[in-house]
Length: 323
Image (cartoon, rainbow, N blue to C red; front, side, top):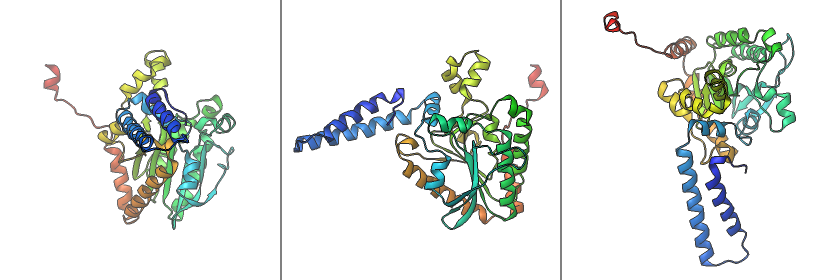
């Protein structure tokens, strides 16, 4: 296990527990000591994770052992068949898409993929998709809607790819088109932020009837480093930017930006992929069952109203403003 800097107390207790567990001597005193250390480890982990700062949440969301889209494809779904290419330019490995089964329910699943090692991350552009990636998933989403299949999206990206080639091929335009098309696709859509939800790269697959976040993920108009670079001209102020952006699951559930927060196992999803996948599967099955019973016209109307309600503001009378 790779521990984050704020997890040092957890690492120390785990090391002590491992040492005690490997002892060849058995005695009632040793068994009692092991029980005490295990209790302290659980309590310490809970106290730390119940009081994470926004910047610490970002670190957890970026943990290299955190489950990615391809992990959920094998743990939550079965019979996944990947689809490739946008029929215009190429195939973007930062966005994966294909048909699968959630138990007996046929669905279309898509999501960002970062990669485990440097080679894979380079091939996937660290989860930052190009225009061809968004065009690819949009074409497949239209196909799913044509055959009445629900759509599930997994969001995990620091943002869309910012390179010159991506801009030349219409990065901003294709993200806007995806958001527009997803708002009116005549099929149930569930979006889940599983790690990072950064900028338009996340929004490009983030319009749905249910928008949920894993407990220790974040969803924001910009990454903390990007915000710090603009406002304070230095990435060193990223923790300060994280505090100001209010982008954790607790904040966004309160603001009405996301519908649900999916609990993670004690210590984060990176500690127990199986448990996280089981919780996610239950959430997806429950909500697909609810959405499948809603008539399409009503489903689209509710989806429209859901996003229209965001960004509310209050206008003061002119008389009060003049005072």
